[in-house]
Length: 326
Ligand code: XMP
Image (cartoon, rainbow, N blue to C red):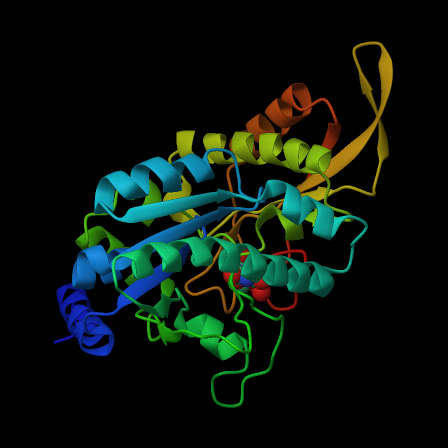
């Protein structure tokens, strides 16, 4: 019988068999996938695992804390944190093409990860151990959409944060490779991860970098982060987190429109709300959120985020639209 408990037992046994007594390293992205993959490996081989969190500055409000505090509290995993926000901003300066952004973020992630990894390897060496394995939170839909599945087209290059270097010295551990997102959440809950992590909506590896249409700058990230936090807060307060698969908030950073506030003219940026319902992200429909909720989100964003003077709703299904705008 195919139950969540079985999946956990099976994966734990498979990880132990694959890894033996070698050391394992795992990059945490801030998302549910890498958290659950790491928690599985932690359960399987405990102290042999070191998690690495690269803070690339493209996460949403509060997410870095969630990794550094909540994940560690729930799993007891060893965590190495690297503040690499400046590295990513410099590398993304002037870049507007979506696939270019993904490539850069993937490339810089590898460099940042290699730097962090060197520290972990050194630590292991000092204890006479060797790090041989790298954990990846790859899901079944990622495998299919990246062209790994039969007859699949490469629609977008799905670099999970940490797309892999060609001369990689590690063997991969991919305990989620055959699972869909709902199964990953069930496994996370079974492993005792807190609801904030397990129920967290999917978030792309390149993060807010592909939700700013135009160049990514510190200022734009700050604007988007504030708008996104409001949208998420209101969705949660309305009790509708379970109704949507994810709700990207997209900043049209190069677009400006005229507005009016108080007795002044404004010339601000629009954001797009992109709430979607989906089973597995392969197809999606736009979520019919209550108008009251949309009105609250719109009012709060335009009142509280001075740079934004217009909130719009994306009513496109997938296909033809993808979930993300880039
Ligand atoms: P799209 O936009 O292709 O998104 O309909 C499908 C799902 O994948 C996420 N997504 C990504 N995840 N790296 C990721 O790790 C990426 O480059 C990427 N692009 C999209 C998206 O958030 C949605 O859940």
